[in-house]
Image (cartoon, rainbow, N blue to C red; front, top):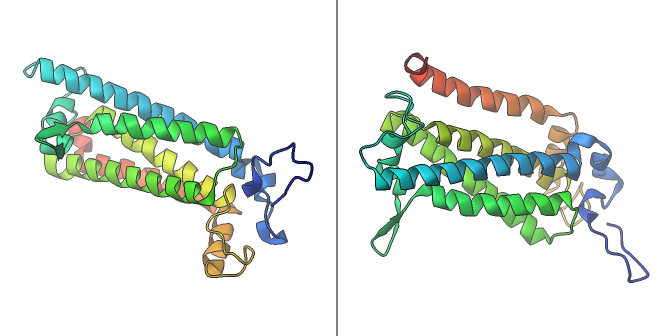
Length: 238
C-alpha cells in the first residue's frame, strides 16, 4: 500500500496496489480496474433502481385500481398483477402493515448506485465497509433469486419488471464481487497475499480472475437463468 509523506495528498485507491509482488498486476488490466468494474456495477444498479421505481408505480396503480390490468400484463404467464397480488410481493410486515418489495428495492439500489460512484471516484474505503458491501450485494442477490424461484415455481407467473430486476442484480453482484477481489484485494491474509489464514482462498481467487475464467462462468450463469425460464414457461411465453 502506498503512503504519503508530505501530509497534503491522500491515497484514494490503495487497494489497487498490492502489498507484495504477488498482486499479479490486476491493476494493470482494464477488466480488473476500478473504472471498468464500478462502471458496470453503476449501470446495473441504475437499471435495477429504474425497474424498482417502475415496480413501485405498478404497485400503487394496482392499489388504486385493483381490477385494472397493468401495462406489464402480457398473458397468463407474463403477468405483473398476478405476482403483485401474491403474499410473496409483500411478505415483510411490521406493526400490522405490509411493505411492497419494490420499496426495499429502491432503498437498496440507491445505496449500490452510491457505492459504485464511490468506486469510480477511487475513494479509499475501510476494509469493513468493502466487506459489508459485498455481503449486502449477496443478500440482495439471494432476495432476488428467492422471488424469482417463487414466481417461477410457486406463483406460476412471471413479472417482466421483476425479471429485469433479477438480471440487473445478477450483473451488479458479478461486478461487485470482481471489484472486491481485484480492486479492494479482499480477502486479505494479514501476511501478504500468499500467506495467513486466507492464503489458499486468495490464491484461488487470483487464479480465477487473472486468466478471465470469470467471464466463462458469468456467461454460463446467465444462460442457466434463461434456460430455467424457457424450460418452465417458454411455450407459454412465445
